[in-house]
Image 1 (cartoon, rainbow, N blue to C red):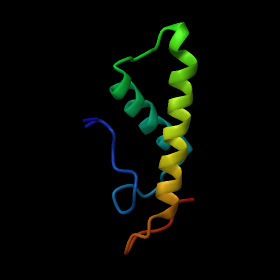
Image 2 (cartoon, helix red, strand yellow):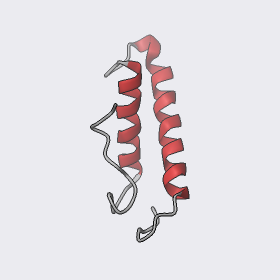
Image 3 (cartoon, rainbow, N blue to C red):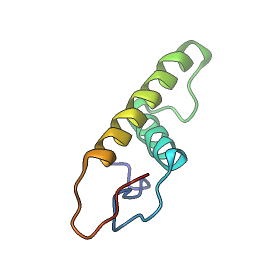
Image 4 (cartoon, rainbow, N blue to C red):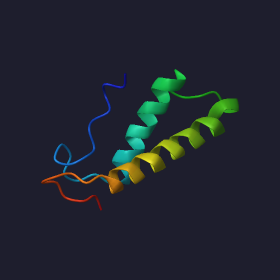
Length: 73
């Protein structure tokens, strides 16, 4: 699932910013929902899901301790 989402943790990704995290979150929500672009009546729920996934992803990446890697940020 979501094979197009790249690994965002070091050492696989050296410079990860909020745009990278948001792009991964968007791909995930698109895959799970089955919508590339949601209809107007689903747009708010879709956007909230992207925000929540992006926030959880940033928290995860900030919390990981990777040997030999550099912290995000």
